[in-house]
Length: 629
Image 1 (cartoon, rainbow, N blue to C red):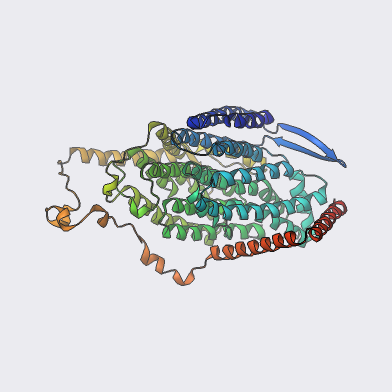
Image 2 (image 1 turned 120 degrees about the vertical axis):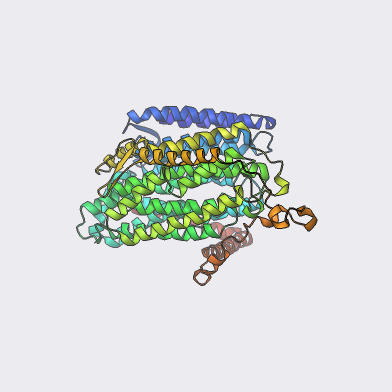
């Protein structure tokens, strides 16, 4: 079942290579059809939890090299929503790629991103997980960097950090296999739990390898720099996938391996350090998430590039989810997963709106835009509802997920973490308002007078996402009920929820009543507007020229669109506290390049000696593997 979906993706991807270049959009139609078929079958799999598939390829010394899949509540939830959102992105991409001279291999590698997506979420052992994890990294490299210099430099940050994370992950898998003689994920965290009381230092080291592996993909501090680079330079439709979907893989890894491990330690503490009812390790990781959200918020406030601003916003939201997940309570894990899903929905909407703006204006710098609300009303409304959700304002879905996060922190008695998340969430209003004002409000530059809304096919996913943001905000039980399946699989108490009402130990909220209150208030205000006296429209520049022709004074609308250095005084407040992580990674990159040049010169100068060194190193690796395994 799972294998057939993966194999059909491989076959259709090769079929897409035979599509002629002038029919480039047909590749995206094939891609959309494949996603729709995959989505249909994944939807049916909710009745097949814990179904397993094994595909053995060969065995060496009793070690089976096979792909093992299992349908779990966690994997099903992630795969269903990510495939659905990817399908919406693909509809947008059909129209976007009509007439575009894009590389045929971009759509080809999109297939493998989806294949790796399904493989990661349904992986039943570490070997399968790692194979599809690397396939995802490899495929995304070519999609982000289709040939131009800026993209290639940006993707280097992502690829180097992903490779570093994969190295640590593989190292941890190797240690667990050495102890269990199995690639089973459940056997891995069970063995690591027992190892904590036998060899604490080794167990801490192994745990750290997985933390580093998953955190690099999630862009948590100190690996937070790659999204702003990769999101900004990636193709505009792929930025929605990067931010809405792909950055969640690290969080999935946390839920798949680290959360079950820490829950075991929490329930059977023995010699482990417990702070505030959770393992010290988990408490530290919660703070890493909180600090990441604060740092990313300030970086978003500084950003003038609209795609970089949205990328930093994504990093901040990943921080919220990480903090909530590692609280290890039912409400914490439910709130974290809820935040992951709601963020995927509203951030896909935001990035598609930004892609639509770029499609029409070919501009990313916010101070060069403005006044597009009347020219692109559907795009404006999509962006508006998206940032309302991102800010956690009712009745959109971001409010419901953040409500759960705050309830978990307050009921768990984490006051300082609550303040940190509140600070970051409050800062979100600043950068979201700036984006709304700079892109869609204010003065419309004269060069954009002829800009119009994007074609209808690109609007379709925006309409669906707007409805989805509102629907899951008013009826949060649509998402929370499947999340309860995940909690039960963790042996946790499910959260109390109906389709419209969320309950906690501290309070409850009925989202439908909240929606009706907001709707009634806005409806009343709109009625007052309609029955009020008609107003005469006056151009803003007339106020500055006392009714005379502004052109006589050499004035243009752009001069009065105040968007550049929007928060400059605020930025200066933190100049003395600024640290540049990017400089560290730049210097690291230079050292790696120097090492590569040295090795290259060594090989080219004396091939015989180089061959001896290579053979000697290979023998050492084989001996090490034989002794350990």
